[in-house]
Image (cartoon, rainbow, N blue to C red; front, side):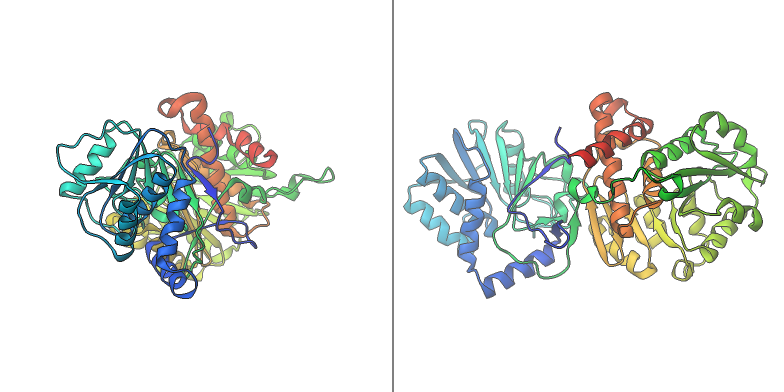
Length: 516
């Protein structure tokens, strides 16, 4: 398996200061197209460049069918058919409707002049005789549900057994959010100009087996995010000196647990995840009533008991202050439960500390009961790690509203509350200090209890010593977590792997990043 999965690049749109890949939404792509056409490259030339890029990205063979809709995405297909014909490939154009954009009609007529065969779609057509089918039905601007002949054509493509190439984006897939119900399943998707959010978010990975991007000279106008690669994470790990000690790599803490959810193994996993990620010391801070359950599961980490009543931590400022002494970062919330005392502890930490504070699980649940402006007043560098339902409670948005534009929702919440927000999903979104990072590693086997806890452990461990920005460090932790999950999946399968398997592969994931 290649890491990270599913994306490769040709003539990448790098920012040479950061060395990262830019990724955009539909509006930014539209504005960028317009500005490029206005300032330097005519639209017909861009269409031909796109077609040439697709041609150079595929190992063409056998009978080729190019299925076209009626916009500029179809125009890419018409231009591609002309190139294929010139190279003596057996190519046929299939028009779902005989409607054209201005540039599309230009290349359709060019294709006819070159002798490219074409026909109109009919319900009784059989797609099974083609070796390669090119999907040029809808572009990134499509946001509805395909119907009628368009839906039928997509279904025929998916059942054809052919190698399927989607141009720019899989038809039926939303370019902003990766949602869709009637969508082309591609063997390869060739993104044009820049990757779009919809190539990676939500359902996208279920429809796209592999994706590459081709740069045709479109300069980005507007907002964009960063798509992380392995080399971007490598900078988190400086070469360590022999003359160093555990204090140089940070004392970090994990505060959680209650009698209702003792979670000894979970907390042990978190402690190990911190240490595997390179911190010097991890302290497990738990209610005294469950400490005897924790000790047998902890080897390298230090257990710090806090007095408790009825299974929950007491709010004792002196005890909390002593437990947090010297910490470079703290994670709070795993197996913690919700109580008035826990809310007071969280409020006390937010008001009196300035270290990075990762609020996860029941930490988020306790946070939602506090006053709304507490995040804007805290000294802490707050990192929130919600899944969709938790983010819905935090933000007041419905899950459906978040899914419509998860990047925008994440960025808005981060900017409003001055926090780093990590929104969990098939591709993780991290919004921090005006920037957004997408981490595309991971596998279906990570949809299991405890995967988020391991992630929290990695974030906490890295924050013990990382000199990079908070956003990149948190996004890097997500990348490592996903890569560790992929390694676990290789060994145990998506069906049988557990979060502990992911935790045990953190060492291999980091080793791979450092050595590659």
